[in-house]
Length: 150
Image 1 (tube, one colour):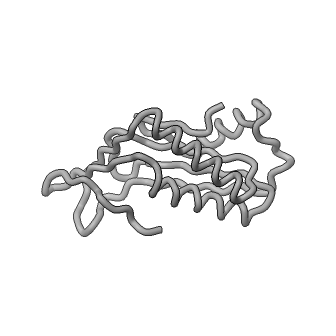
Image 2 (cartoon, helix red, strand yellow; image 1 turned 180 degrees about the horizontal axis):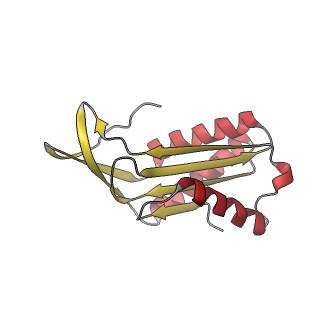
């Protein structure tokens, strides 16, 4: 069962989360009674960056390598934060303002581990995963060379 899903089309985060949780449970990869906490993060596209209006973004990735790196980020979080399960959904392709870009979900026995792991996964994703962003603005296109801070 995959813990990472790359989407080329818009996704509804809460519907996807409910479906994935049920799949994990049915596959025996997530035991409901063992979870006292779940933490989620949903990132959406803003219509501005670095002082400019942004009309759209083109998000590129390296198929296979990206999924492997995201799986490794989940493995690291499971070990470091003692969580029961995690899931990442991420968009690629052309993304419009207000569309979801990323969903990170974490299940754990305790809330501190869930919150800490969710943040850790998101930060690692921003710094370690092979994604490349090109913004489309009124002034033209530009590659994004740095990530926004937390």
